[in-house]
Image 1 (tube, rainbow, N blue to C red):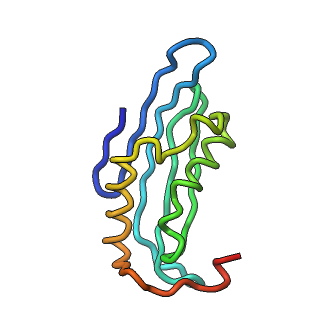
Image 2 (image 1 turned 135 degrees about the horizontal axis):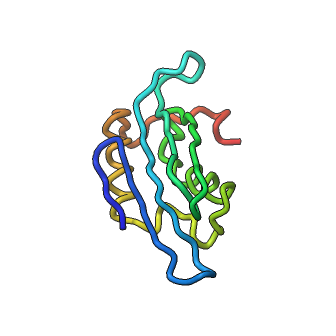
Length: 120
């Protein structure tokens, strides 16, 4: 199950058997002006994976903010969710809504420049 409101995505799944995994995660995000990188989004992943607490934050500059799903997936894996179950993009409808909200908040347009140092 997933729900979305601007600035917040909640994803919850209950294990179907003992070999399965449960998670109850929220991703909150806000526009932030970083002194070094400029405009970007500050993300917070919090909740639980298999009843273990998760609380991580990360910042992505404007030209990288759309890669949030990869960062969230990596953090979920770090906290014990198998790679096969960790993709936030699996909730594609909600991922699309979040993507569009991030785009609107950052006022991103097609063709906006990407910092070359972020391509490494």
